[in-house]
Image: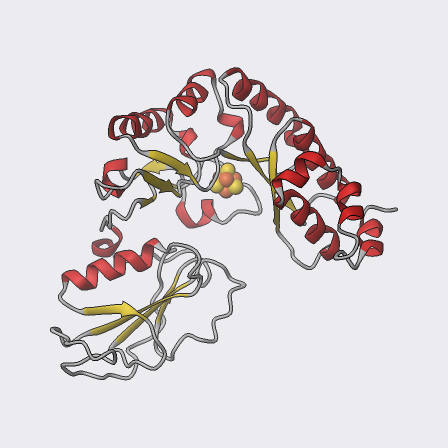
Length: 321
Ligand code: SF4
């Protein structure tokens, strides 16, 4: 969620009262536009804090208001950009992967109980933008830097925290010390599980763990990970299952069936939404209903939902049936 400058200022309305009728102390009025509002946006929050510290009037962008400066941030390239006002300063991986916030803004720690304690990754998965965007992994913060000292939950967006064992141990110790539940929102790398880190994962208060089973070639390492997790008493996790990238529908269904048989949950991540559209929608729905996924085979699910699933023929065609 980095920002790149693409333009100048929007139309300028300088005055004492904002468009909500509130008094404005500073001359500068800043509008912040998060193009994916259902996701928290760290860059937007850093900009908010930075401009508040400058004494500027900062608010979420509203099209009818006038601003001296508008920042727009987007994570996904597929998000529509047509609501961005002319002259806005735009950034984030939805626009560009290489430019960064100025260091005086990037270094701000908003303490909103979410964020990163590391940036980067040790791997180079061909479908992922993290290595290009963030480079090699390194620690950037402690849990305390993200915490407002009140919340009982911190959501971490670290992309591969298990790749830094010492740092991971410190973060877990801090979570235990401050009584904080951790949500490793981006998932953990199952290939890096060890006897030591699974014990830590078990010891901390946590949201359900997420791992990824991105390709059938990881079958052996997933099996090994499940043994380690079960030995530590972590009997269930949610597994991201990448589809529509370099696997066939049969392989995708096999991975889902394996996870299901092992008592795991799955979350289907579609790389290309147009490929095998109806099949991928159906397996995403099936795995999305955790109870149905646990109790019904895919065929039983299709039967059960036959009133709603209109393209059964296309679904079976994708499976070569
Ligand atoms: S391990 Fe995860 S973060 Fe790292 S490159 Fe692969 S998908 Fe991206």
